[in-house]
Image (cartoon, rainbow, N blue to C red):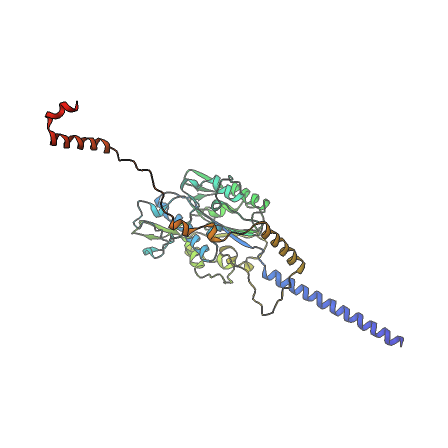
Length: 395
């Protein structure tokens, strides 16, 4: 009897251990699935696209930026999450043979200006100060929302810059420049102020790799069109427009992005290979040591798109509301209805009364010169009837 009781207790303990182990295994599997589902850790995407060059001969830099703008919008980032900075308006330039257009391919095949371009900073607004203020959030309170980078610690940010540069600097409008140290410090401020989750920095300029050498903040991945000591070359000359339409590196990057759709599983390692030296002539570079994730696990759409994470399930999930909360809400709604009597739409806006209302009669005033003309008519009739000989009876 005692042996049987001991055996039953041992079996119960063993069953409990098995259930506990299965429970912990199931929990670990669920956590692993959740981590895989939210592997990037971000909930929203932002893009800051900057062209720093003025003048007609820098047409390609504007086309570079507008092409990236077109791609990120196509992949799902809305205008409300894009800060577009163009130092010159090539679409309205007097030398443009096709006004209101900016082309990125020869023979005018692709107009990247489109009908819905929203430029947030244009012309002389594109300065080093304004760019740094956008990144760090140090902008005046009167600045409209469209000119703000309203990111948070769950934001993945794409920063694309193009223009003329050199070893450790990028020129703004041929009048000032931003250094790699200033850019690195701005990114550190963003990290300290929890303004990004992960950041992808892409620059297309001469000696572009020098701009990310000084970065020291975490979760930054950087790409450049050329190494230190190399020039970044132009591409796609168009005789009709008279200038080059794009830069080589951006051209091949955008050619790669055209094959991407919001559901693509293409990763960042594929982006690193899009423009070898045989195509770009310069040597593109990238830096990933500050980035925590392996680039092969980073989707292109983690930065260039805004994909909503949705999981489809065939299971039925029943949601049972809390009756106590519903009753309290019903009571509050009832009190609000008693206190505030709702107005009907017709009472708020009596359109019928407005339409059928008779116009108010205005006080009549004779037009200017009417009295003088009336007296002149009376005198003319008098002279015609009685003649001048009767004037003595009047005066």
